[in-house]
Amino acid sequence: MDIPALYDIYIQHPIVTTDSRNCPAGSIFFALKGDKFNGNRFALNALQQGCAYAVVDERDEALEGNDHIIMVDNVLESLQKLANHHRRKLKIPIIGITGTNGKTTTKELVSAILSKEFKVAFTQGNFNNHIGVPLTLLLMKHEHEIGVVEMGASHPGEIAQLCAIAEPNFGLITNIGKAHIEGFGSFENVKKTKGELYDFIREHDGKVFVNADNEMLLEMSEGMDRLLYGRNNLDLFASGTLSSETPFLEFDWNFFEHPHHVKTHLVGEYNFDNALAAVAIGKYFGINADSISDALEAYQPKNNRSQFERTEYNDLIVDAYNANPTSMMAAMDFFVKIPTSLPKAVIIGEMSELGNISLEEHQKLVNFIASQQFEKVYLVGNIFKTLTDGDESLRQWMNGNCFSSVAELCDELQKKPLKGYYILLKGSHSVHLEKAVPFL
Image (tube, one colour):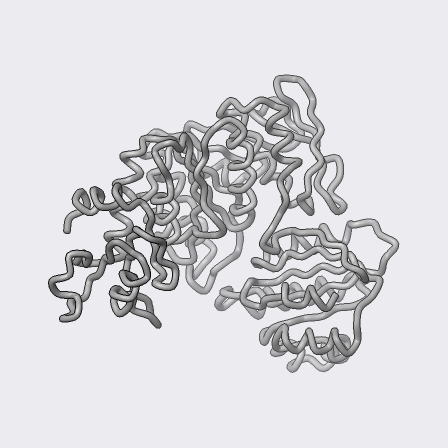
C-alpha cells in the first residue's frame, strides 16, 4: 500500500500504536521489528485487542485474506513516511530541539510557554528517536497551531534523518558535549550530527535560536537567520541575569526594558541557558512577558531530571535520568556551591556509552570528587569497580562504598542509613539511581 492510501486510513483511525499490549479501539498497529522482537508475530493479536488495522512487512498464511492487514515493504519506513506526509498536511510551524544536555527540559519549558497562547503538540517524555519522532508527529491534530519536537541521536546522521521526517521550520541546539561517544566514534562526529539541525534549517530558509555565550554554536550558525539569547547582554534578543541557583534557579530578564523576576522549580545554574532559550522562543512567538514568567515559575521538573526532594531524613537533588562528562561536571560544580549547614554526600552512577574515553572520563570524575570535602561518597557501576580494583589507595579511600549495581547500594543504605545529609544523585539512566531514593 502506498503512503497516500495509508494516510486515508490514518485519517479515519488517527491513533497509532507500536505495542500490541496497548491497542486502543480503532487504532492502527505498526508491526516494528528490532534485534529482540518482531511485531509481525503480534499483528493478529493487535487486531483482537482492538486495533482496526495492522501494518506488517512479512507475509504469513494466517494473515492472508484479512482486509485489516496492510502489507508494506518496510513497516518502519512506512511509519516515518506517513508521519512526514501528515506533517506536510498540517502546515504548522515546528520547532526542532536537539543538544547533548538540556533538550528535554528546554522542550518542556518552550511548550509550557507557547501553550499560554497556542494549541501546542510536543514530544511526550523522551520520544525523540527514529520511532518517537514519527509517533510525536502522528499525535498532532489539525487543531494544533505549533509543534515542538525533541530530537535525540546516538549515531552519525540521525539528526538529519529526523529533520527529513519532521521538517522543522525553527531550530535550537542547546549545547554540544561528550555523550554517546561509543556510537558516534568521536566528539567531532557529535558536533557534526547535532549540526545537522542547522544544516536542514539553513537549506530550508528557517530560523534558529542560538546561545550567544556558546562560541561553538555561534560559529556553526554564522550567516543563518538567527536570534541570539544569553546572559547579561541587553543587546541580545533575550537576555537574563542570574540571581540565585542554590538550589532553585532564579533570574531576572528584560522584556523591552521592563524587568521581570522569575523563581523556578529548576535546580542548578546549568538550567539557566535552557530557561533563556525558552524565553527567546516565547518572545519571538508573541507570548507576553507575564505569561512567559508564569509558565517558567509553574513548571515542575519530573522524570528524575534536576529534581529537589526533601525526605524525612535528607535533602536530595535527584538528577538520575542522564549523565555524560559535561552534565556531570555541571551538576558537581553546582552542588559544591550550595550553601548548607548539612554535611554533603554524593551518590554517583557511571556514565554510559562513552566508548574508548570511558575510563579516562570516569577517572577525571573520581579525581574531582576526591578533591572535594564531601562527607560521604558512593560510586555505582562496573567502570568505577574497575578503577577502584586497580588502585589500592582509591579502594581504601572508598572504604567499601563502590558498588556494581544500585541493588548493592540499596542493601548498604538499608544496613547503614544516611540521615541528615544534603545528597546529590547523578548517573546515567541505565544505572537506575532513582531506586535508591526510597532508602534516603
